[in-house]
Image 1 (cartoon, rainbow, N blue to C red):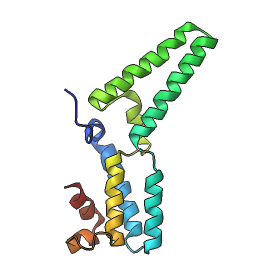
Image 2 (cartoon, one colour):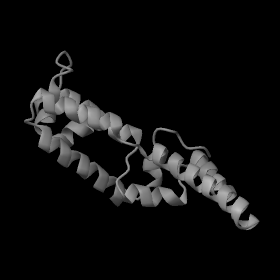
Image 3 (tube, helix red, strand yellow):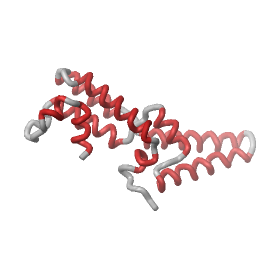
Image 4 (tube, rainbow, N blue to C red):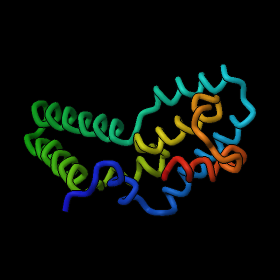
Length: 152
């Protein structure tokens, strides 16, 4: 069964790793709860530059394919198996949301686009972008409840 694009990586990641990534996001938001608008805008720019897990996997895949082709051409034809194996892993990721490099990259802290977007929305709420939206005070006071409200 093909998993939904928006949740496939998080569903394929160990719950402890997902929680660690969420905790880091909450810790960053705590640092910005009393920040001035300039600092919040700077953080939004940083989030725009952050590589999500899909980009990291695509980069990894491209590097493995190029290395395999180069080594197969210059050294031994058996190296051509490397790009074939990488293509199988990428196909597995597309269909199931998991592939061998995913676990390592998630442990290194690479987030999904949705996880990055949650932080982006939380920063915009802290900055006051959504003044016309009724955000409960408890969500503003607790970054955990703020993230939970965004996830819903």
